Length: 311
Image (cartoon, rainbow, N blue to C red):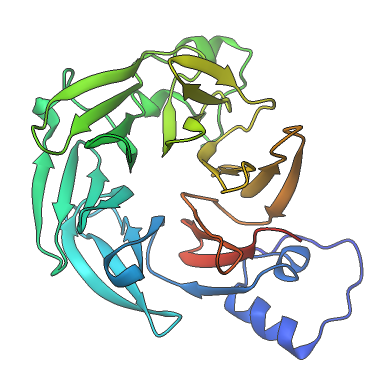
């Protein structure tokens, strides 16, 4: 993999060299702020704390049906296979000792032994699921919030880059993205957000009982908060927006898959600054406030990175 060019000369310590050796796709500036980094598999997408407070990572694998998996992080930086036989596992939610995982057009439920069964299948949605991505558990109800990105094949040009927001190609993207709420007890499904043209391709969803529900638009780069049936747009455009989360103080963190960045927005002013950059693809992260780190998979790099929540 090609390492980004560094224009400034930097004196490297042996510790920094060791860190960069384990994270060779990360530029030197980024490496200085990294706590640690280690490999987790082919195309990791999401990370979560689940059974016994261990870290679990969804690993999409290659393009072979059934080669996706969930791995558990053990001994700090080693992986152990937890569940297999998935296709392209992405978002995860953990509640009532059950791990829920989206997988293209279905949602799995997985027990503490790694045994899986289908929770909701493609045809059970109000409209057949097209590209399920993220999910989160609503702490106030028994519902899971699930994003369906819709027509993802229309978002990019022949080189894999997102089409410009202002242009003819962007207007050709079918507005089929939705967000569903699924009852864990009855499996009843309702539509939370239906074909929102400002979001278009919803990617991440995070439910916070005090601050509201954050939703990221991958193509548009818009991030919205829904609280008490009121929708508010956060300032800024984050093309390739993957995940957004509140910390306990009210600051907002946003990752961009396509830009390889993580931003932090101030809880009062919402002024943004780049917390971290230099990843190949910044995916679904979690905040470990006790350890003061943001834990994020880099899908294209195959690694899990631990980044200070504040510099």
